[in-house]
Image (cartoon, rainbow, N blue to C red; front, top):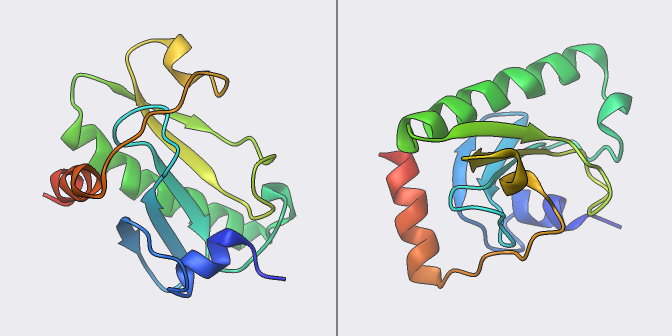
Length: 128
């Protein structure tokens, strides 16, 4: 059965896309810790990030770096934190989260809620 992220890549579930290439996809997290919280995934469904083939692993991080630079440009007053947790969805993914302090990256914090219009504004701000 496809993961929710595979369904997003396939367009079966809508998302707020930030970037895409042949093998990777990034989109705004719909349960964000902060404005701009973005997920970066390989299109190929692999549960555990360390099970990716060596080249796929390197390429995923290279793609994540490009996305992080977009976020850094959008949120210059923040640091872009990186987290790989691997518990929520059985599909390898990297969290990129604009933060001001370490407590902002606590996944037990209450998640933010945005309207569709707010998500579109955030996406457009990041895309410039």
